[in-house]
Length: 464
Ligand code: URP
Ligand code: ZN
Ligand code: ZN
Image (cartoon, rainbow, N blue to C red; front, side, top):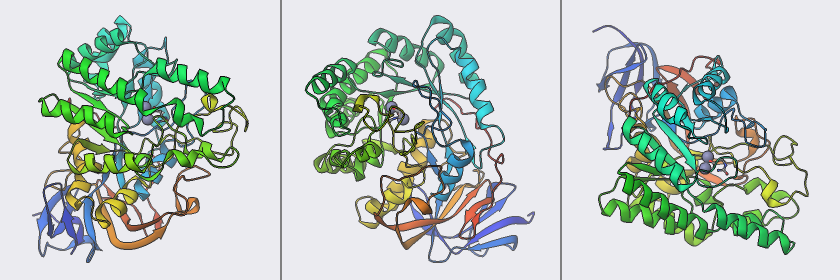
């Protein structure tokens, strides 16, 4: 047997199926051996009393993305992947976002340029389809799926992005032909517009009213409709950033009927509430995203749906807009009404530590469920499995070594993104990733970040 390049020694190796003490041997970027007393390697990392997990896959993050208001997210592929890796995530799937009138193929080419020479870990692209013209559906989409962009997101709200039901059905039918996974942002647009108008005309314009404008009813109705349309079109659908248990219930019921509907939730819906937007002055803008965080009861309901497997994917929806920045949350100034404030919260680095702490450490989910939610399920659903998302012979050596006992108080200065705040400031977590390995390279450890920008590669994906 040729020599191993790296051995991770003495850790507890966890997959979605189970955990066992063994060494992990790595050769040429792949997992080459699993067992006890592996032969010597050029390099050894001691993982005794630590957990060795598949590197996380963050399948919903906005990196170097231009919003419809014309501003870019604060993180590019360098800072975004650096922050991801320091949080135990070794693959990201951000978006190539089409604005109306653009060729989808040109959009993807432009996002490849944005990523070139920058990423520290591997990445793929979901497409955002805002203009499903015949040429997009019949020419661009087949070409892009063949190039490995096998998933796409559609919006039911936002003036500049939303599709009507007829367009949604056209996209679903195209996805069915091509074997692509459709992700949906499900909120009822007209209800949001109507509620926003009512609130603004009553003088209710501060950030906290965002939660009332984007009500759970709007999410509930649109989720039900999206599920019904996907069921009619006989095509799988993944409902992203589920914030309310009522919306999750539509997914659960569909699955009981045998319909392939999948669900994702995110840290902001487990760790924040609408009250966070009710801070003095403009401060509440730091917590604004769509759908918005709800309440403690909703948090409990979502935990139940994570426990029972209804929600299969846990992503960050990292949508970083700096707080004290006129190209960020203050795009229209500190007195802007809530409907003008850029939506989104950061979370690419804290996604896994937050779930580990409140989920595994506090006994809400098992360590195997944690691995499934953060790595294996997104790998399976988005066509990356078994290259990514699992510790198995032949898979990429993408690993994170976790200290399950490390306690960390979260503060922005310990993070590696390009933000000026974290919505989780002051929260204490138990359990922390101390080493991230991508295709056998140590990207970061307790001595710092070692990978150079540009070492990460684009991942063409197969249909799920
Ligand atoms: O508020 C959010 N989530 N902003 C990012 C865009 C999206 O809808 O995912
Ligand atoms: Zn969305
Ligand atoms: Zn998003």
